[in-house]
Amino acid sequence: MTGRVEGKVAFVTGAAQGLGQAMAVMFARHGAKVALTDINGLGLEAAVAGINAELPGAAIGFEHDVTDEARWQEVLDDTVTRFGGLHILVNNAGVASTRSVEDETYENWRKVHAIDLDSVFFGCKYAIPHMRSSGGGSIINISSISGIIAGHNLAAYNSAKAAVRHFTKSVALHCARRRYNIRCNSIHPVFVATPILDGLTGSMSREEAHEKLGRQVPLGRIGEPDDIAYGALYLASDESKFMTGAELKIDGGISAM
Image 1 (cartoon, helix red, strand yellow):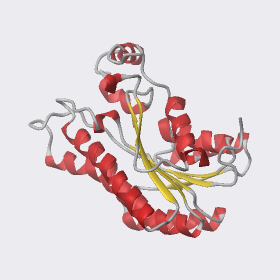
Image 2 (cartoon, one colour):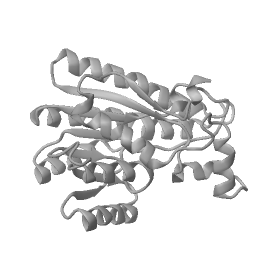
Image 3 (cartoon, rainbow, N blue to C red):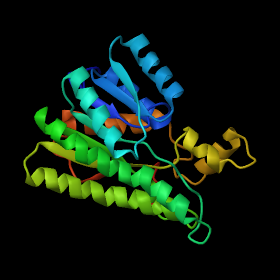
């Protein structure tokens, strides 16, 4: 199937690799124009080039520190100028931290919240006016199953991702009350084979670490980026037009335990 987001303009943060790149590719293959942003300029350039090699003119890229409020306004304005509107926002950029409340530092606590939570606020705040002018659309905030299920060594990450979940509902209700025709939902993945897991490997090889993590998941494996990208495609498309303020758990069944 093609064309599920035909004619729409999408904006995806943290898109140089991992989930962000997978979602950007998925949207482009299904008919959208896509703005990719990332703080990793070289990776971003390669991701944009890869999409445009397959689908000429489908993608543009912006170097973007998602904690920089002024830069948010610049890149969103530039996207609308280049592509003529904005219909899909994916707040995906994020970092992890595997420290307990006693081991975490305040400096790192603030860093995790700035990247994982404050950036979502900036994205929603400054994208909504553009989406209204474009006739509405869909905001997708990438939280985590760690925003629902706590871990003893994920103090900052649990806090930030849980806040994204609840903030998403506030944005959804605001847009619904104002009749903006903008929906806002969150996605909650479990372990997915992306670079964010590299910090969890320790002395193990990547394959060994993925197998170990997969044993915690009822389906017996970790996820693949496209497992999440297909969920995002559904939320970005008009197929989910009656879904807002909800969380989509793509977690291999771990939250059912």
